[in-house]
Amino acid sequence: MITPAELARLLEIPEPTDEQARVIEAPMAPMAVVAGAGSGKSETMAARVVWLVANGFVRPERVLGLTFTRKAAAELGARVRRRLDTLREVLPADELERLGGESLFDGEPMVSTYHSYAARLFGDHALREALEPTMRLISPAVAWQICSRVVDAYNGPMDRIDWSPDTVTKAVMELSGDLSEHLRTADDVRGVGARLDEMFAALRKPLKAQRDVLAKQAVREQLMPLIEAYGRAKSVKEIVDHGDQMALAARIAHRHPEVGMIERSRFSVVLLDEYQDTSQAQLVLLRSLFASGHPVTAVGDPCQSIYGWRGASAGNLLRFASDFPVQPSIGGRRPVPAPVVQLSRSFRNGERILDAAARIQEELRADTEAVPVLVPGAGRDGRGRVECALFDTVEEEADRIAARIAALLTADQDTAPDGAPQVEPLRFSDVAVLARKRSQFPLLRRALEARAIPVEVVGLGGLLTVPEVQDVVATMRVMHDPSAGASLARLLTGPRWRLGPRDLVALGWRAARWPRNRRGT
Image (spheres, rainbow, N blue to C red):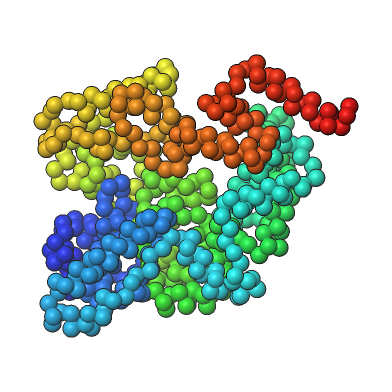
């Protein structure tokens, strides 16, 4: 067989580390890979696919790769395709003939997002659950419109809720999505409320924190009729949102074992990326399809779990060994858990950065041994720099960051900020600023632009901080809802109309009297 190192030399790419090689040439069986930040997990996943194809274990079209974003799916698919094309060119003719000829490399691995795969599965097998395969997936904007109509038409009790209609709509959509991701129903929520009432009835004097739990549960229960009405509205229109789609696909896979047989016969190898961010619905879907000893490789890092707000659980990765055993329990025998391996060498950060990260992760590693202590890659010993500062105001913080960046860009040094040799001067594109929330973007942007540092704010949230875009959004909000006072005030006080405070007061007074004038009173 071609070894991972020989394959790397054929493709003219860096040879894998011992840890990476162990993953690349692992047997065709379930395996979990805990890959630290910057440890080359994407490269390792692509290399495993190419190694399996190069050694005749699997054809490319019988490989399934799932990840969370379309961008990651496209990058992984393109990387595998490039490697396979290169391998077809460099392999000797006799080796190609032994593997079955050049046609072996013609197929395409199926690499998609978890939700896209669930959509395909639902479309193929919806009839098994007496559902229409043509049920249309709606966008978040359409879902908002439908939910908003449900909220506006609701006349039930709302004594526990004093929110605006838009806030109620947002809460209904978020809670509906949470229920779908957890495969729960409104009756499950009411059941939790009944148990909480029993527990608190036994307390002589509940603490404030305990009373708050009851109050939040009461709010959730008052939202349940709205969530049920929202579900009925989608059912009548034969439409589904993303949460519904994943929950329905999980239900189909769980109730119909033949669906798993079909998928296992179609895909000989399954790769699951960012597995620490899978939800309960995704876990049920994947376990129902591939948990019978099928070759499934799950890659993730509990320290990088970012989707807990929508039902994801880093514990899914830690429980992979028991959820996807090498040999399931048969005839009373105990199941054989899947192996768990680690990628602990980071090629992204220097030694000092990794030392700081290790201190932050100490509490998480105390709960499980699966979280690796990252070590630097070759040439990164002693590199990296960690600075910490506390400020009285967010304005001071933004100013300090801008000043620090300006100093780095103007400094004439032979050593880079991380301690590496400075080959060429730093460019603006070499610097990145990460913020915890979007509300920090405008301050950072103004501080950087004040020092003539060009700024690119990545993502839609960043675009919404641009004044011209904010004016467009405000105009659209006022057109949709004339009572959107904040947006209307922005437009009236802006450069187009330039109304002052006295004019706004007079306008507000006139608007308040206008309906009565229309009635002639």
